[in-house]
Length: 358
Image (tube, rainbow, N blue to C red; front, side, top):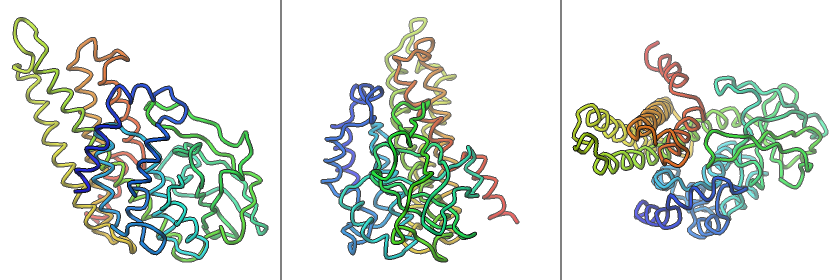
């Protein structure tokens, strides 16, 4: 039922013409649509009832992000869900009011990167005894829309989470990035000089596991979205193959185009199976080895499939496929962005080798 509602909502709110209109729009999405999403309760789907969420678990969010990916509906939902999962898993009394705000619709994000490598989990940002931050985070998704930025930092050699409110940042603290996927928004965020209240510093033994698990959750949600986008890309390809004629014949009749199209279909279905398998294993507690393996397999397969589908969409559309006006451009750009988020396929397979083969 949730998938049906999400599919219908996204189809109505995000036709391809609206997607293109939002490419040059400041936030990249329609604020009224975001408010409708909040009204549907999607911002609190995976959060517990104790903080105002629906208590349905993370698995219930996967069909929603797949539907969003299928219509390329972009909002801060994924960034907010990942931030909520990080705080929920890290615990701490300071997290509860923020989680309640997130469940009620406050956008949030996690400032993960300091370099450009998702494989480097070291943290250089520092927070001193007075709660003053020093450091700069890169490529923070939805940074300009977020009311809360969760920043991993080091305090006296211990990894902690600093909860920064948007109003604490100076006017020049956020520097927008130019991304290959124009449906997305991210920015570099300078946290130097921000003073974090003690109740907004989350510490303790749960933080390390929370950071690891939230990365896996992020990989899973991006994979779920990529499955939706991959299926939309496949539909675009099939529609073109059924209408375009060359040498007096529909180009869909040529085996050189039929076989790759079938490959995309099989890979999208395989990716969807991996994503929903992982969704059944990701629970509220610390993720075990099976859940980690499933999330990494889903991310590697889904985003690699989308890259292949986007590439074939451009090629099959011929010279038109290389133009900005062709919708194939949207898919191949989304593919390049999704592939890199939370590590590309090579990164995850490298980790899977040690998990499965050692």
